[in-house]
Length: 242
Length: 242
Image (cartoon, rainbow over all chains, first blue to last red; front, side, top):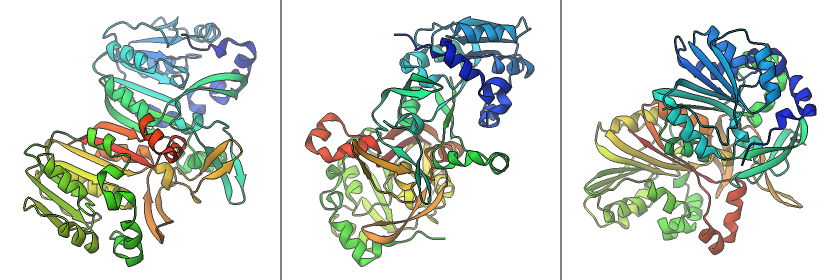
């Protein structure tokens, strides 16, 4: 099985390119300050980014002092854009499918992944690869779509006179979800928080962080639309020690 | 602050006594087999049950080989019934409010709690007490109401032509919830899964289990009403090492 590579669909790619986080990078992602605070000191470290997209994080990691950075992505278009935007011989991009990727043993101090794992069906397999690829005590820090976002059979806010509600069902019915996000028929893999954390523990990780991300007061003041996050969070952030 | 002691309200107590898990004990609780599998071997161990109710677990722990068992509860009525049902000098019951309880240091190999923590406001304080009360490497195993159950401003299934949905909102708005369960005006404390796990990690625990409980196929066949659990789970189970 290989990941659906929707990012190489021209219409999807064009839509994705217009998202604030695509155009403006890490600082346009409201969860980034929280995710950044979960990272270890990167000075002199070897870093791998699974699902590197345009390479924003890879370049940031180098600025933060990493000695070498690798970025893997399944999308040729993403990698082409990442390469075009990067002038740094210590950053290397490569094509890899997270369903089948084989990682070198004890090769990294940090494995990072932003909003890619909810596309991966072979989750346990990938975690075993990440565990193997980390030096002992190395860090795995990842964001993914929150399971509350992926669970419902019909996602979408429902208006009520006192606000909005999220029509939750099927939370423990895990597996693929066919949704429309930028393009039609995007396939996401729904897993509960319990399953995600249990998979990490079974792969031999020690859990260090579990964050259901919500905006702080300053972010809410700057962007009131983030208030929906308080009703149903969009991002799940995890940190673990290998 | 002290916990609302709804269990000593006569009407509530009478209603509670009629629940299957009250009348028939652990085996009437569908999540019990999963919770039991999270427990360490109890042979010769010292056990504390926080929110012991009628003492079902305390008596089970002794049958499972525990050397001594203490059960704490805020409800005099519960404790009176527990004492009446128990003939075992190695089981001791005591009145304690989980908001303010002071536990002896390194006194227990297992601290257990079933469906009590969602009443506790001073959660971090209690976890610090539990950590202190455990021998190094001791186990903390607890169930609580799932945050998806406690979150909504108006909990209750909403029928839809394709089934049911749970009207989720306010998931990240933590704090007290005034709900009607058996009696009116029961106060529960809503916390997200992220907050619960982060509190455990900050208290110095190592997370060993995180289970959003759902029925297995045999349980579903025996009790089809459990299917609602697959849409929105009722129980969150956590295990940690002190």
